[in-house]
Amino acid sequence: MSTANGSATEPVFWAAADLAKAGYPVFPVNQDKNPTVEGGFYAATTDASQIGEWIMEGREHHDVAFATGIVSGVVVLDADTPEAVARMEADYGEPTVRTRRGAHWYFRHPRNGKVRSRKVAEDLDCKGDGGYAVAPPSRGRTWVDCMPDRTALLVLPPEFHKRTTTSTAEEGTSLPEEVREKATEAIARHVKTLSRARKTDATSTSLICAAYC
Image (cartoon, rainbow, N blue to C red):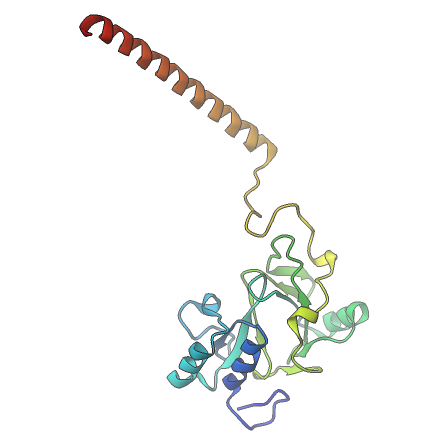
């Protein structure tokens, strides 16, 4: 049981409803941060009835996590050591969340390409598309101020996301120039083959007509 500041008052996962109302797609996790529902973070939802069902199934004391990236519009930078926290505070100010080992900074997804979930610096991880973050009032996590308005967050700094000309859906589909050239040549050969086949079929049809028509 926990509140936003860790005092014992109510089951942790009850707070999932408030996060969901604010637009954070939530799901339950255990103390090891592993999802406890089928589908994991793909099951993340803002649907109050689904959240209520998870609570009725006995997950009221589970921690609450939310899907990061384009689905929530939130990217989280996770600093795991005091040194990493100090570097982030020097550059980006106070964090959004304090954790047992460090802190989290919430930023708005730039929506100009995929933001990969990855390690971005020493003891600093980016939780973006295809990732998730455990949120307060989960064990060991507290809001520095309060749960932030997703739409009011600062956009993820460009140093953590290189702008691309492809959309999130298209990213990862571009081919290296050499591969693209080989593919073009192969397609051209295939088109020529089809063209020759059509000419052969046409000639055969003419001969058949001349013989039988």
